[in-house]
Image (cartoon, rainbow, N blue to C red; front, top):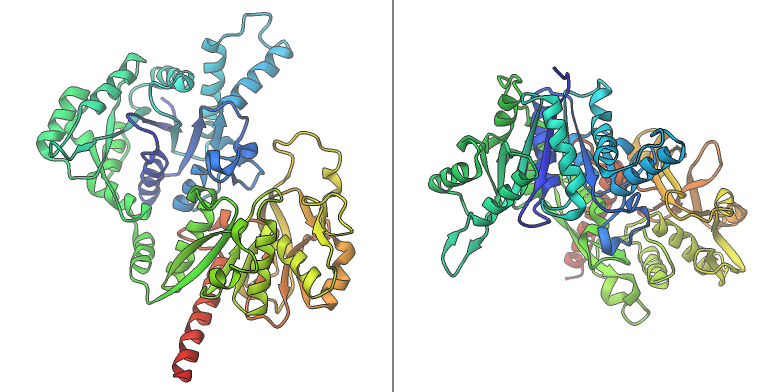
Length: 546
Protein backbone atom coordinates (compact mmCIF):
# COMPACT_ATOMS: atom_id res chain seq x y z
CA UNK A 1 0.00 0.00 0.00
CA UNK A 2 1.35 3.43 -0.96
CA UNK A 3 2.13 5.90 1.83
CA UNK A 4 1.03 8.92 -0.19
CA UNK A 5 -2.50 9.25 -1.55
CA UNK A 6 -3.19 10.86 -4.93
CA UNK A 7 -6.13 12.98 -6.07
CA UNK A 8 -6.47 13.84 -9.76
CA UNK A 9 -8.62 16.76 -10.91
CA UNK A 10 -9.86 16.71 -14.50
CA UNK A 11 -12.16 19.12 -16.32
CA UNK A 12 -14.98 18.68 -18.79
CA UNK A 13 -17.59 20.53 -20.89
CA UNK A 14 -15.78 23.88 -20.79
CA UNK A 15 -12.42 25.42 -19.95
CA UNK A 16 -11.97 28.09 -17.26
CA UNK A 17 -14.29 26.37 -14.78
CA UNK A 18 -11.78 26.80 -11.96
CA UNK A 19 -10.00 23.46 -11.52
CA UNK A 20 -7.17 25.30 -9.78
CA UNK A 21 -9.51 26.93 -7.26
CA UNK A 22 -11.29 23.64 -6.53
CA UNK A 23 -7.95 21.85 -6.13
CA UNK A 24 -6.64 24.62 -3.85
CA UNK A 25 -9.87 24.68 -1.80
CA UNK A 26 -9.81 20.92 -1.27
CA UNK A 27 -6.14 21.14 -0.31
CA UNK A 28 -6.95 23.91 2.17
CA UNK A 29 -9.64 21.78 3.84
CA UNK A 30 -7.35 18.74 4.06
CA UNK A 31 -4.51 20.91 5.39
CA UNK A 32 -6.90 22.38 7.96
CA UNK A 33 -7.58 18.82 9.15
CA UNK A 34 -3.86 18.29 9.77
CA UNK A 35 -2.83 16.54 6.57
CA UNK A 36 0.36 17.46 4.70
CA UNK A 37 -0.86 18.42 1.24
CA UNK A 38 0.61 19.79 -1.97
CA UNK A 39 -0.77 20.46 -5.45
CA UNK A 40 0.80 20.16 -8.89
CA UNK A 41 -0.34 21.29 -12.32
CA UNK A 42 0.13 19.29 -15.53
CA UNK A 43 -0.04 21.62 -18.53
CA UNK A 44 -0.66 20.12 -22.00
CA UNK A 45 1.07 22.83 -24.04
CA UNK A 46 4.38 22.11 -25.78
CA UNK A 47 6.19 25.17 -24.41
CA UNK A 48 8.76 23.99 -21.88
CA UNK A 49 7.39 26.60 -19.48
CA UNK A 50 5.23 29.73 -19.76
CA UNK A 51 8.27 32.00 -19.44
CA UNK A 52 8.31 32.95 -23.13
CA UNK A 53 4.52 33.20 -23.49
CA UNK A 54 2.87 36.59 -24.00
CA UNK A 55 0.74 37.49 -20.93
CA UNK A 56 -2.21 37.94 -23.31
CA UNK A 57 -1.81 34.26 -24.23
CA UNK A 58 -1.54 32.68 -20.81
CA UNK A 59 -1.88 35.32 -18.11
CA UNK A 60 0.99 36.00 -15.73
CA UNK A 61 4.02 33.75 -15.41
CA UNK A 62 4.38 32.75 -11.77
CA UNK A 63 7.87 32.21 -10.29
CA UNK A 64 8.84 29.88 -7.45
CA UNK A 65 11.69 30.13 -4.95
CA UNK A 66 13.79 27.67 -6.95
CA UNK A 67 13.50 29.79 -10.08
CA UNK A 68 10.84 27.84 -11.97
CA UNK A 69 8.65 29.83 -14.37
CA UNK A 70 5.25 28.22 -13.93
CA UNK A 71 1.52 28.39 -14.56
CA UNK A 72 -0.40 31.05 -12.61
CA UNK A 73 -2.42 28.31 -10.82
CA UNK A 74 0.64 27.70 -8.63
CA UNK A 75 0.01 31.18 -7.26
CA UNK A 76 -3.45 30.05 -6.13
CA UNK A 77 -1.92 26.97 -4.52
CA UNK A 78 0.54 29.06 -2.51
CA UNK A 79 -2.00 31.74 -1.58
CA UNK A 80 -4.41 29.13 -0.21
CA UNK A 81 -1.94 26.77 1.47
CA UNK A 82 0.73 29.29 2.57
CA UNK A 83 3.42 26.79 1.52
CA UNK A 84 6.02 27.23 -1.21
CA UNK A 85 5.82 25.31 -4.49
CA UNK A 86 8.72 24.33 -6.75
CA UNK A 87 9.68 23.14 -10.22
CA UNK A 88 8.14 19.76 -9.36
CA UNK A 89 4.71 21.36 -8.95
CA UNK A 90 4.38 22.29 -12.63
CA UNK A 91 4.92 19.88 -15.51
CA UNK A 92 4.41 20.70 -19.19
CA UNK A 93 4.24 18.52 -22.29
CA UNK A 94 7.29 20.40 -23.57
CA UNK A 95 9.30 19.43 -20.49
CA UNK A 96 8.11 15.81 -20.70
CA UNK A 97 9.11 15.42 -24.34
CA UNK A 98 12.37 17.31 -23.80
CA UNK A 99 13.33 14.89 -21.03
CA UNK A 100 12.39 11.76 -23.01
CA UNK A 101 14.27 12.95 -26.11
CA UNK A 102 17.37 13.73 -24.02
CA UNK A 103 17.21 10.22 -22.54
CA UNK A 104 16.89 8.74 -26.03
CA UNK A 105 19.93 10.73 -27.21
CA UNK A 106 21.93 9.38 -24.25
CA UNK A 107 20.95 5.85 -25.20
CA UNK A 108 18.99 5.15 -22.02
CA UNK A 109 16.26 3.22 -23.89
CA UNK A 110 18.79 0.68 -25.20
CA UNK A 111 17.87 1.12 -28.84
CA UNK A 112 14.14 0.57 -28.36
CA UNK A 113 11.56 2.48 -30.40
CA UNK A 114 10.51 5.46 -28.28
CA UNK A 115 6.70 5.80 -28.12
CA UNK A 116 3.99 7.77 -26.34
CA UNK A 117 3.10 4.55 -24.50
CA UNK A 118 5.09 3.55 -22.51
CA UNK A 119 7.89 6.14 -22.64
CA UNK A 120 5.95 9.43 -22.48
CA UNK A 121 3.38 8.02 -20.05
CA UNK A 122 6.13 6.60 -17.83
CA UNK A 123 7.82 10.02 -17.73
CA UNK A 124 4.51 11.64 -16.75
CA UNK A 125 3.93 9.07 -14.00
CA UNK A 126 7.42 9.68 -12.64
CA UNK A 127 6.80 13.45 -12.53
CA UNK A 128 3.44 12.95 -10.79
CA UNK A 129 5.03 10.80 -8.07
CA UNK A 130 8.15 12.92 -7.40
CA UNK A 131 6.38 14.92 -4.69
CA UNK A 132 4.71 11.84 -3.20
CA UNK A 133 7.96 9.87 -2.98
CA UNK A 134 9.69 12.73 -1.13
CA UNK A 135 7.99 11.66 2.08
CA UNK A 136 6.91 15.25 2.76
CA UNK A 137 3.23 14.83 1.90
CA UNK A 138 0.28 12.65 2.87
CA UNK A 139 -1.78 13.71 -0.14
CA UNK A 140 -0.75 15.00 -3.57
CA UNK A 141 -3.44 16.71 -5.64
CA UNK A 142 -2.71 16.79 -9.37
CA UNK A 143 -4.62 19.15 -11.65
CA UNK A 144 -4.75 18.09 -15.31
CA UNK A 145 -4.83 21.15 -17.57
CA UNK A 146 -7.24 21.43 -20.47
CA UNK A 147 -10.54 19.62 -20.98
CA UNK A 148 -11.23 15.89 -21.29
CA UNK A 149 -11.32 15.00 -24.99
CA UNK A 150 -8.52 17.40 -25.95
CA UNK A 151 -5.87 15.69 -28.08
CA UNK A 152 -3.12 17.37 -26.03
CA UNK A 153 -4.40 15.88 -22.74
CA UNK A 154 -4.59 12.24 -23.87
CA UNK A 155 -1.13 11.15 -22.61
CA UNK A 156 -1.92 12.64 -19.18
CA UNK A 157 -5.30 10.93 -18.98
CA UNK A 158 -3.70 7.60 -19.95
CA UNK A 159 -1.02 8.12 -17.29
CA UNK A 160 -3.71 8.73 -14.67
CA UNK A 161 -5.51 5.56 -15.77
CA UNK A 162 -2.33 3.53 -15.35
CA UNK A 163 -1.47 5.11 -11.99
CA UNK A 164 -4.94 4.49 -10.57
CA UNK A 165 -4.55 0.80 -11.43
CA UNK A 166 -0.98 0.62 -10.10
CA UNK A 167 -1.70 2.45 -6.84
CA UNK A 168 -4.98 0.69 -6.03
CA UNK A 169 -8.51 1.88 -5.33
CA UNK A 170 -7.83 3.26 -1.84
CA UNK A 171 -4.77 5.27 -2.85
CA UNK A 172 -6.00 7.34 -5.80
CA UNK A 173 -9.21 8.97 -6.95
CA UNK A 174 -10.42 11.22 -9.74
CA UNK A 175 -12.46 14.39 -9.29
CA UNK A 176 -14.14 15.53 -12.48
CA UNK A 177 -15.04 19.21 -12.60
CA UNK A 178 -17.86 19.92 -15.00
CA UNK A 179 -20.47 22.51 -15.96
CA UNK A 180 -24.22 22.29 -15.44
CA UNK A 181 -25.48 24.99 -17.84
CA UNK A 182 -28.73 26.87 -17.23
CA UNK A 183 -30.97 27.39 -20.26
CA UNK A 184 -32.99 30.51 -19.54
CA UNK A 185 -35.43 29.82 -22.38
CA UNK A 186 -36.33 26.46 -20.82
CA UNK A 187 -35.83 27.69 -17.28
CA UNK A 188 -33.85 24.63 -16.22
CA UNK A 189 -30.39 23.21 -15.59
CA UNK A 190 -29.14 20.65 -18.09
CA UNK A 191 -27.12 17.54 -17.15
CA UNK A 192 -26.51 16.14 -20.64
CA UNK A 193 -23.17 17.96 -21.23
CA UNK A 194 -21.86 16.47 -17.99
CA UNK A 195 -23.07 13.00 -18.93
CA UNK A 196 -21.21 13.24 -22.25
CA UNK A 197 -18.09 14.54 -20.52
CA UNK A 198 -18.09 11.64 -18.04
CA UNK A 199 -18.67 9.22 -20.92
CA UNK A 200 -15.63 10.66 -22.74
CA UNK A 201 -13.56 10.17 -19.58
CA UNK A 202 -14.78 6.56 -19.29
CA UNK A 203 -13.84 5.90 -22.93
CA UNK A 204 -10.27 6.65 -21.82
CA UNK A 205 -10.57 4.01 -19.12
CA UNK A 206 -11.16 6.35 -16.16
CA UNK A 207 -14.22 6.37 -13.94
CA UNK A 208 -14.84 9.63 -12.10
CA UNK A 209 -15.10 9.06 -8.34
CA UNK A 210 -16.43 12.53 -7.55
CA UNK A 211 -18.30 15.08 -9.66
CA UNK A 212 -17.87 18.75 -8.84
CA UNK A 213 -20.55 20.68 -10.73
CA UNK A 214 -20.10 24.35 -11.53
CA UNK A 215 -23.49 26.04 -11.61
CA UNK A 216 -25.23 29.40 -11.39
CA UNK A 217 -28.23 27.86 -9.61
CA UNK A 218 -28.75 25.42 -6.74
CA UNK A 219 -28.79 21.74 -7.70
CA UNK A 220 -31.98 20.01 -6.58
CA UNK A 221 -31.91 16.57 -4.96
CA UNK A 222 -33.61 15.11 -8.04
CA UNK A 223 -30.92 16.54 -10.29
CA UNK A 224 -28.19 15.18 -8.01
CA UNK A 225 -29.79 11.73 -8.14
CA UNK A 226 -29.94 11.92 -11.93
CA UNK A 227 -26.26 12.89 -12.16
CA UNK A 228 -25.29 10.10 -9.76
CA UNK A 229 -27.28 7.50 -11.69
CA UNK A 230 -26.13 8.41 -15.20
CA UNK A 231 -22.55 9.31 -14.29
CA UNK A 232 -22.02 6.21 -12.15
CA UNK A 233 -21.05 7.98 -8.91
CA UNK A 234 -22.52 7.92 -5.41
CA UNK A 235 -25.03 10.67 -4.69
CA UNK A 236 -22.92 12.13 -1.87
CA UNK A 237 -20.11 12.41 -4.41
CA UNK A 238 -22.11 14.88 -6.54
CA UNK A 239 -20.73 18.18 -5.25
CA UNK A 240 -22.27 21.55 -6.08
CA UNK A 241 -19.87 24.40 -6.84
CA UNK A 242 -22.11 27.45 -7.13
CA UNK A 243 -20.77 30.83 -8.26
CA UNK A 244 -19.21 32.72 -5.34
CA UNK A 245 -18.56 36.43 -4.72
CA UNK A 246 -14.87 35.68 -4.11
CA UNK A 247 -12.61 32.67 -4.72
CA UNK A 248 -11.83 32.72 -0.99
CA UNK A 249 -15.41 31.60 -0.26
CA UNK A 250 -14.88 28.32 -2.11
CA UNK A 251 -13.21 26.33 0.73
CA UNK A 252 -16.22 27.02 2.96
CA UNK A 253 -18.63 26.12 0.16
CA UNK A 254 -16.78 22.85 -0.44
CA UNK A 255 -16.84 22.17 3.32
CA UNK A 256 -20.64 22.61 3.33
CA UNK A 257 -20.89 20.19 0.41
CA UNK A 258 -18.68 17.65 2.21
CA UNK A 259 -16.05 17.39 -0.53
CA UNK A 260 -13.21 16.79 1.93
CA UNK A 261 -15.20 14.11 3.79
CA UNK A 262 -16.01 12.23 0.58
CA UNK A 263 -12.34 12.36 -0.48
CA UNK A 264 -11.06 11.11 2.90
CA UNK A 265 -13.59 8.28 3.04
CA UNK A 266 -12.72 7.23 -0.50
CA UNK A 267 -9.00 7.21 0.39
CA UNK A 268 -9.66 5.40 3.70
CA UNK A 269 -8.27 8.26 5.79
CA UNK A 270 -9.61 9.54 9.10
CA UNK A 271 -12.16 12.35 8.88
CA UNK A 272 -12.97 12.81 12.57
CA UNK A 273 -11.16 16.17 12.97
CA UNK A 274 -13.15 19.18 11.80
CA UNK A 275 -11.11 21.57 9.62
CA UNK A 276 -9.69 24.50 11.58
CA UNK A 277 -10.54 27.49 9.36
CA UNK A 278 -10.50 30.13 12.11
CA UNK A 279 -7.73 32.27 10.58
CA UNK A 280 -9.16 31.82 7.09
CA UNK A 281 -12.60 33.00 8.17
CA UNK A 282 -11.12 35.89 10.13
CA UNK A 283 -9.51 37.03 6.86
CA UNK A 284 -12.84 36.63 5.03
CA UNK A 285 -14.65 38.66 7.70
CA UNK A 286 -12.21 41.55 7.35
CA UNK A 287 -12.22 41.28 3.56
CA UNK A 288 -16.02 41.49 3.38
CA UNK A 289 -16.45 44.20 6.04
CA UNK A 290 -13.99 46.99 5.20
CA UNK A 291 -14.01 50.20 7.25
CA UNK A 292 -12.34 52.32 4.57
CA UNK A 293 -11.96 52.47 0.81
CA UNK A 294 -9.06 53.46 -1.47
CA UNK A 295 -8.53 53.61 -5.22
CA UNK A 296 -5.18 52.50 -6.57
CA UNK A 297 -4.15 52.85 -10.19
CA UNK A 298 -2.44 49.83 -11.70
CA UNK A 299 -0.34 51.22 -14.55
CA UNK A 300 0.44 48.37 -16.91
CA UNK A 301 0.89 47.18 -20.47
CA UNK A 302 -1.40 44.14 -20.40
CA UNK A 303 -4.36 45.52 -18.43
CA UNK A 304 -6.97 44.19 -20.89
CA UNK A 305 -6.46 40.72 -19.36
CA UNK A 306 -6.89 40.59 -15.58
CA UNK A 307 -4.86 37.37 -15.30
CA UNK A 308 -1.78 39.25 -16.56
CA UNK A 309 -1.44 40.79 -13.07
CA UNK A 310 -3.23 38.08 -11.07
CA UNK A 311 -0.78 37.92 -8.15
CA UNK A 312 -0.77 41.72 -7.76
CA UNK A 313 -4.57 41.84 -7.65
CA UNK A 314 -4.70 39.05 -5.07
CA UNK A 315 -1.95 40.68 -2.98
CA UNK A 316 -4.14 43.79 -2.73
CA UNK A 317 -7.02 41.65 -1.47
CA UNK A 318 -4.77 40.26 1.27
CA UNK A 319 -3.36 43.71 2.15
CA UNK A 320 -6.83 45.26 2.06
CA UNK A 321 -8.16 42.74 4.57
CA UNK A 322 -5.14 43.32 6.81
CA UNK A 323 -5.88 47.08 6.82
CA UNK A 324 -9.68 46.61 6.86
CA UNK A 325 -9.92 48.62 3.67
CA UNK A 326 -11.50 47.88 0.30
CA UNK A 327 -8.89 48.35 -2.43
CA UNK A 328 -10.48 49.39 -5.71
CA UNK A 329 -8.08 48.74 -8.58
CA UNK A 330 -8.27 51.04 -11.58
CA UNK A 331 -6.43 49.47 -14.51
CA UNK A 332 -4.73 52.12 -16.65
CA UNK A 333 -2.97 51.28 -19.91
CA UNK A 334 0.41 53.02 -19.92
CA UNK A 335 0.36 53.32 -23.71
CA UNK A 336 -2.44 55.89 -23.43
CA UNK A 337 -0.82 58.12 -20.81
CA UNK A 338 0.61 61.40 -22.13
CA UNK A 339 0.83 65.07 -21.09
CA UNK A 340 -2.81 65.65 -22.08
CA UNK A 341 -4.30 62.66 -20.24
CA UNK A 342 -2.02 62.28 -17.21
CA UNK A 343 -3.95 64.47 -14.76
CA UNK A 344 -7.31 62.99 -15.67
CA UNK A 345 -5.98 59.45 -15.23
CA UNK A 346 -3.87 59.89 -12.07
CA UNK A 347 -4.96 62.92 -10.00
CA UNK A 348 -7.93 61.25 -8.29
CA UNK A 349 -6.00 58.15 -7.20
CA UNK A 350 -4.94 57.33 -3.63
CA UNK A 351 -1.96 55.31 -4.82
CA UNK A 352 -0.07 54.45 -8.00
CA UNK A 353 1.46 51.05 -8.76
CA UNK A 354 3.58 50.78 -11.89
CA UNK A 355 3.52 47.12 -12.85
CA UNK A 356 6.11 44.72 -14.33
CA UNK A 357 6.44 44.11 -18.06
CA UNK A 358 8.83 43.66 -20.95
CA UNK A 359 9.70 45.68 -24.06
CA UNK A 360 9.49 49.35 -25.02
CA UNK A 361 5.73 49.66 -25.63
CA UNK A 362 4.09 51.98 -23.09
CA UNK A 363 7.37 52.90 -21.40
CA UNK A 364 6.99 56.69 -21.66
CA UNK A 365 3.49 56.50 -20.17
CA UNK A 366 4.86 54.64 -17.16
CA UNK A 367 7.57 57.26 -16.70
CA UNK A 368 4.98 60.06 -16.77
CA UNK A 369 2.87 58.20 -14.17
CA UNK A 370 5.93 57.90 -11.90
CA UNK A 371 6.68 61.61 -12.29
CA UNK A 372 3.12 62.64 -11.44
CA UNK A 373 3.04 60.43 -8.34
CA UNK A 374 6.44 61.72 -7.19
CA UNK A 375 5.69 65.41 -7.74
CA UNK A 376 2.19 65.26 -6.22
CA UNK A 377 3.24 63.14 -3.23
CA UNK A 378 0.87 60.29 -4.15
CA UNK A 379 1.95 56.96 -2.61
CA UNK A 380 3.95 55.08 -5.24
CA UNK A 381 4.95 51.44 -5.63
CA UNK A 382 7.11 50.28 -8.55
CA UNK A 383 7.63 46.58 -9.19
CA UNK A 384 10.46 45.26 -11.42
CA UNK A 385 10.05 47.33 -14.61
CA UNK A 386 8.12 49.82 -12.45
CA UNK A 387 11.19 50.29 -10.26
CA UNK A 388 13.36 50.75 -13.35
CA UNK A 389 10.98 53.42 -14.68
CA UNK A 390 11.28 55.24 -11.34
CA UNK A 391 15.07 55.29 -11.72
CA UNK A 392 14.82 56.61 -15.28
CA UNK A 393 12.25 59.27 -14.31
CA UNK A 394 14.37 60.51 -11.41
CA UNK A 395 17.50 60.54 -13.54
CA UNK A 396 15.80 62.62 -16.22
CA UNK A 397 13.77 65.06 -14.15
CA UNK A 398 15.78 65.49 -10.94
CA UNK A 399 19.36 64.49 -11.79
CA UNK A 400 19.12 66.24 -15.17
CA UNK A 401 20.18 63.31 -17.38
CA UNK A 402 17.62 64.05 -20.11
CA UNK A 403 18.77 61.08 -22.20
CA UNK A 404 18.57 58.57 -19.30
CA UNK A 405 17.09 55.29 -20.49
CA UNK A 406 17.21 51.50 -20.24
CA UNK A 407 19.31 49.34 -22.54
CA UNK A 408 16.14 47.28 -23.02
CA UNK A 409 14.55 50.26 -24.79
CA UNK A 410 17.63 51.83 -26.39
CA UNK A 411 20.73 49.66 -26.83
CA UNK A 412 22.81 52.78 -27.57
CA UNK A 413 21.52 54.87 -24.66
CA UNK A 414 23.91 57.71 -23.74
CA UNK A 415 22.95 57.43 -20.05
CA UNK A 416 22.02 53.77 -19.47
CA UNK A 417 20.83 54.04 -15.87
CA UNK A 418 19.24 50.60 -16.36
CA UNK A 419 21.63 48.17 -18.02
CA UNK A 420 21.89 44.53 -19.04
CA UNK A 421 23.30 42.28 -16.34
CA UNK A 422 26.88 41.20 -17.16
CA UNK A 423 26.03 37.49 -17.16
CA UNK A 424 23.13 38.15 -19.57
CA UNK A 425 25.24 39.65 -22.36
CA UNK A 426 26.27 36.34 -23.94
CA UNK A 427 22.86 34.65 -23.65
CA UNK A 428 20.98 33.82 -26.85
CA UNK A 429 18.22 31.49 -25.56
CA UNK A 430 15.21 33.37 -24.17
CA UNK A 431 13.56 30.65 -22.09
CA UNK A 432 14.57 30.21 -18.43
CA UNK A 433 17.66 32.42 -18.71
CA UNK A 434 16.65 35.50 -16.72
CA UNK A 435 17.56 36.21 -13.11
CA UNK A 436 14.98 33.92 -11.54
CA UNK A 437 13.88 32.71 -8.11
CA UNK A 438 14.72 33.76 -4.57
CA UNK A 439 17.64 36.14 -3.92
CA UNK A 440 18.76 37.71 -0.64
CA UNK A 441 18.51 41.42 0.08
CA UNK A 442 19.86 43.62 2.91
CA UNK A 443 17.68 46.54 3.99
CA UNK A 444 18.76 49.91 5.35
CA UNK A 445 17.47 50.56 8.86
CA UNK A 446 15.11 53.51 9.10
CA UNK A 447 13.85 53.09 5.52
CA UNK A 448 10.21 52.58 4.50
CA UNK A 449 10.96 48.98 3.53
CA UNK A 450 12.67 48.29 6.86
CA UNK A 451 9.60 49.63 8.65
CA UNK A 452 7.41 47.32 6.56
CA UNK A 453 9.46 44.14 6.96
CA UNK A 454 10.67 44.79 10.50
CA UNK A 455 14.06 43.22 9.72
CA UNK A 456 17.19 43.82 7.67
CA UNK A 457 17.58 40.43 5.94
CA UNK A 458 14.92 39.35 3.41
CA UNK A 459 14.61 36.97 0.46
CA UNK A 460 12.38 37.73 -2.54
CA UNK A 461 11.65 36.24 -5.96
CA UNK A 462 12.99 37.77 -9.17
CA UNK A 463 12.23 37.60 -12.88
CA UNK A 464 14.20 40.09 -14.96
CA UNK A 465 17.16 40.59 -17.30
CA UNK A 466 18.05 44.24 -16.69
CA UNK A 467 19.40 45.96 -13.56
CA UNK A 468 19.99 49.31 -11.90
CA UNK A 469 23.36 50.53 -13.22
CA UNK A 470 25.63 51.08 -10.20
CA UNK A 471 27.73 53.57 -12.21
CA UNK A 472 24.99 56.14 -11.49
CA UNK A 473 24.35 55.12 -7.88
CA UNK A 474 26.33 57.89 -6.14
CA UNK A 475 24.82 60.62 -8.32
CA UNK A 476 21.27 59.38 -7.75
CA UNK A 477 21.77 58.99 -4.01
CA UNK A 478 23.10 62.55 -3.68
CA UNK A 479 20.08 63.77 -5.64
CA UNK A 480 17.68 62.03 -3.20
CA UNK A 481 16.94 58.63 -4.74
CA UNK A 482 18.16 56.43 -1.93
CA UNK A 483 19.23 52.81 -2.26
CA UNK A 484 17.54 51.05 0.67
CA UNK A 485 17.96 47.42 -0.37
CA UNK A 486 21.02 45.67 -1.86
CA UNK A 487 21.98 42.11 -2.73
CA UNK A 488 24.76 41.28 -0.23
CA UNK A 489 26.77 39.11 -2.66
CA UNK A 490 26.53 41.03 -5.93
CA UNK A 491 26.03 44.59 -4.69
CA UNK A 492 23.11 44.96 -7.13
CA UNK A 493 20.50 47.53 -6.11
CA UNK A 494 17.19 45.89 -5.20
CA UNK A 495 15.21 48.79 -3.70
CA UNK A 496 15.06 52.56 -4.14
CA UNK A 497 13.13 55.20 -2.19
CA UNK A 498 12.63 58.93 -2.73
CA UNK A 499 13.77 61.03 0.19
CA UNK A 500 11.07 63.27 1.64
CA UNK A 501 8.17 61.52 -0.10
CA UNK A 502 5.36 60.06 2.10
CA UNK A 503 5.72 56.61 0.48
CA UNK A 504 7.73 56.10 -2.71
CA UNK A 505 9.25 52.63 -3.09
CA UNK A 506 10.57 50.77 -6.13
CA UNK A 507 11.65 47.14 -5.89
CA UNK A 508 13.48 45.06 -8.52
CA UNK A 509 11.85 41.83 -7.31
CA UNK A 510 8.24 40.58 -7.36
CA UNK A 511 6.77 40.80 -3.84
CA UNK A 512 3.32 39.80 -5.12
CA UNK A 513 4.49 36.20 -5.60
CA UNK A 514 4.89 35.68 -1.85
CA UNK A 515 1.65 37.24 -0.60
CA UNK A 516 -0.78 34.73 0.91
CA UNK A 517 -4.02 34.78 2.88
CA UNK A 518 -2.15 33.81 6.06
CA UNK A 519 0.80 36.16 5.39
CA UNK A 520 -0.10 39.28 3.37
CA UNK A 521 3.06 40.75 1.88
CA UNK A 522 4.42 43.53 4.15
CA UNK A 523 5.08 45.93 1.25
CA UNK A 524 1.53 45.64 -0.07
CA UNK A 525 0.23 46.10 3.47
CA UNK A 526 2.41 49.21 3.97
CA UNK A 527 1.55 50.66 0.54
CA UNK A 528 -2.18 50.12 1.10
CA UNK A 529 -1.91 51.78 4.53
CA UNK A 530 -0.09 54.74 2.95
CA UNK A 531 -2.86 55.05 0.34
CA UNK A 532 -5.46 54.99 3.12
CA UNK A 533 -3.69 57.78 5.01
CA UNK A 534 -3.37 59.78 1.78
CA UNK A 535 -7.11 59.32 1.13
CA UNK A 536 -8.05 60.45 4.63
CA UNK A 537 -5.80 63.50 4.33
CA UNK A 538 -7.49 64.44 1.04
CA UNK A 539 -10.90 64.25 2.71
CA UNK A 540 -9.70 66.32 5.69
CA UNK A 541 -8.24 68.94 3.35
CA UNK A 542 -11.55 69.24 1.48
CA UNK A 543 -13.47 69.61 4.74
CA UNK A 544 -11.05 72.33 5.91
CA UNK A 545 -11.34 74.21 2.61
CA UNK A 546 -15.13 74.09 2.70
